[in-house]
Length: 79
Image 1 (cartoon, one colour):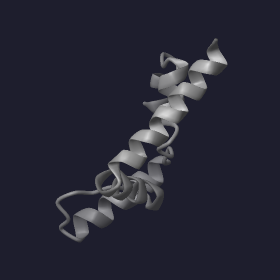
Image 2 (cartoon, rainbow, N blue to C red):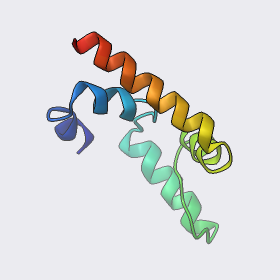
Image 3 (cartoon, one colour):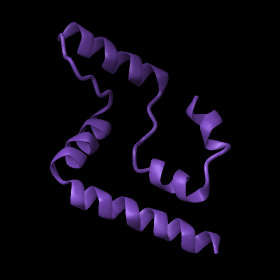
Image 4 (cartoon, one colour):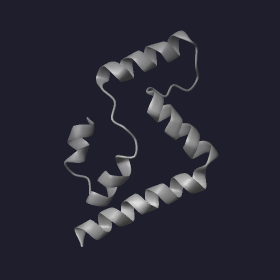
C-alpha cells in the first residue's frame, strides 16, 4: 500500500513521510497482535514508531521543526 502511495508523492511529501520508518507486514502484524493480547486501546507497531509517536506527543515543537527542515531540504533539491 505504501509503495503505491510513494509513486504519487511529491518530493517534499516523500521526505516528510520518510521520518517514520516503514515496517514490514510481519512487524505490523506482530505489533498489532501483541497490542491486542495486552488489551491496549492504542497500538503503535514498531519501536522506532513508538518513539516517534511519543516524541510528537511530548515534544511537538521539535517534531514540527524536524519536519519543516526535511521539507525545506527537499524543496531546495527540487529547485
